[in-house]
Image 1 (tube, rainbow, N blue to C red):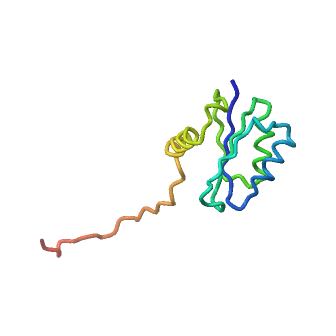
Image 2: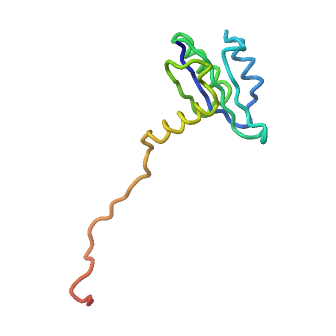
Length: 120
């Protein structure tokens, strides 16, 4: 079974160029899917590519040349299983599970605080 490499791309990148780059790199037309939002042509889009172990770096390089924002590798998944809703749910679950960097936390040292003059 193959693996799926999915990438989320910037809205201003050209998906036609990405398709041409994938095909120039040896991927057939039937080995990738471009998911476009037809309502808004200036929104981010997603691409999934069926890759074997030795093709992962090649596909990542093509993605990086075409302004990929984030890539996700799904192992033991076929292209038939890689519909938009399924990938979106897997990506959402992975993002929720990631530990994101927290902002710098400053701990304030102790001060005199309240003293005996405060009355309740």
